[in-house]
Image (cartoon, rainbow over the protein chains, first blue to last red):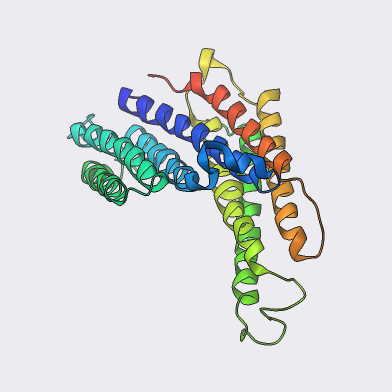
Length: 137
Length: 146
């Protein structure tokens, strides 16, 4: 597993723990109203739960494994810098979008989503030539 | 690489949840539409349809997607020390907790719509979170350069 994949998968697991922990608190608070008062109102962090799990965990895990597993071109992963830049933007985007959603800062939410979209585009450009038939397959 | 039993169980269970979620989605769409036709009524005996929506979403995201991810990751990630089968007690605990938690959630959320009071959401939340922690603790050392 290449270093970038290790980083992305581990970050995705951290997002999983964060997002599911928050989700567990949100779920439990529906029958334990005092929990809902944590942090000035737990339900205000619902967007953090969504962003960390859907993008931080699922999308990042998929991209991290794809970077590892997709066929290499001439034994190399060409233009890997695009995948690295994508990983950085994705994580920055999740933080910005989640924070923007939690604190109702629309500019941050917009910036975060834009960063995530750019990350997806960068990764797609990196991965496109690697989606190909293997010799003999 | 042969698929270990625990992975097969996770993936097959995920497929079952996918089917359940699709059926739940049809019911949700039908029950929420007053003019959906005979047998489908927005104000039928199943009460507030909105209560079923979070359950439906989590059948897809936890029951199908997350469980599929767990099963495939357990199968494919590098195995430490050449261990042939990663299916230890911790992973079976993870499987049990995740599914018990999710089923409790669905029962607790759908219960009021059926006039029942289940009231086990905090336990459901704890079980699902424990399952996630067990999975992460298992898989973390397997995420390494190879």
